[in-house]
Image (cartoon, rainbow, N blue to C red; front, side):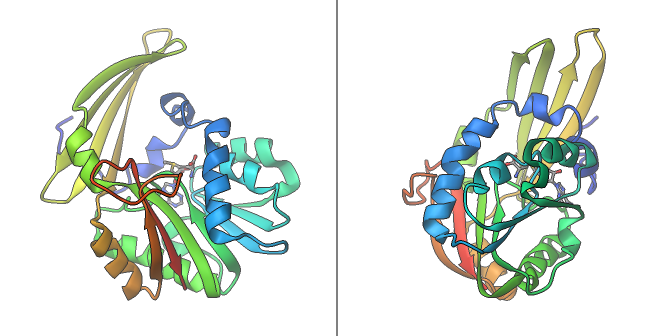
Length: 248
Ligand SMILES: C[S@@+](CC[C@H](N)C(=O)[O-])C[C@H]1O[C@@H](n2cnc3c(N)ncnc32)[C@H](O)[C@@H]1O
């Protein structure tokens, strides 16, 4: 496969049985301080209605359930939702759906979107549709917490090639930035214990903070704070993340 052949629907294959192996470091425990920070910033109140958009295996919902909020999770991956159901049981309502067509209107006080779960679509209008869907799923005055990649630190720290092992799996990862599309792309080759090999692709749009704030404003979401990490530090060139808090 050439470096340049990323399909618009790459996400339909990337988030299946191999995802929890490739991203095993994104664990339930690692989600605890992330939820702690989000709750501090958002001030989640008893009775709040909260949606984890792109909830994956439910690792953030697991920690969010310490608050007396009404919890919902939406994700496209049947496999990751199955794991989420196992983890959170009846502590949340889980819905299979596509973030471009969020099936809720005027429903939530808070929407959270953790760990680079935005900017997936090659056509920017489809990413904008996600923001419009978030705006209409939030109650007026509701808030969005979005944790995205810091474009500047990705540009300076990107490792073009790395190899590692997770259990009996050998993982070979190639990463590159496409300046034409402003996307960071990744191709991962996973070789299993019996020599069986699978490849998955990932592709995420990079945004300058002013650019994503502009797109959010177009959708009626007003960015009120931007952080560079889960400790509340400012967004700098070296900051690991770009965390946005916006109000509908
Ligand atoms: C990087 S993972 C993050 C998952 C979770 N937020 C976490 O931190 O563990 C991105 C998630 O987005 C979901 N996803 C990808 N494309 C989607 C789509 N079109 N609609 C809804 N969910 C999608 C994937 O299934 C996956 O669970």
